Image 1 (tube, rainbow, N blue to C red):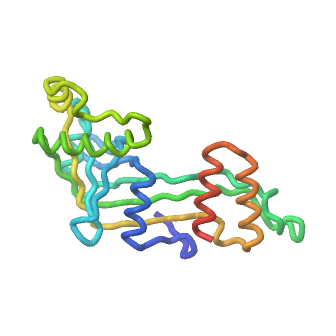
Image 2: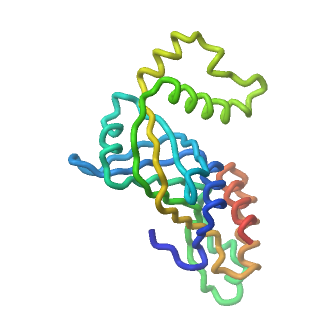
Length: 210
């Protein structure tokens, strides 16, 4: 990924934290049939050091499950807040008109090697962790233990676990860092005025990087 210096993020701990916030990833690998991609929620672990491990699950019927485990290298792409930036939001436009539309975004590319696992206990632990993370927002969180064991067992038999040991991390935060502080604040205010969840999330992300 092309990353101009102002937008580069390298700290592994910060990138792991952001991957947890972004929650889902597009897993890409190449095999005999060409490129294939699968979109999944991801569990991010700090160990093994220094770059950690990613775990997720595919449907057993997904041909990518076998393909990704055989690939020499796989890529997990995490997508953070993103959105259109209007030239009208830059106060500098009134002085020199040297502004153009652009797109701000945050993304992380995690490279590594993958292996699959089918142990029912390991799959249950993975699904349980992912469920607990998302159910924590609910007034009455649902637990995997709320469903009959035989039903959960049948669901687990239909999936396969994927574990990726991360060998390289690249983070890109294109958040108007190449603009003046005045223009950055103008972008934040412009996004906040849009009012939709995506624009508000992007405005918050820009504020974190200023």
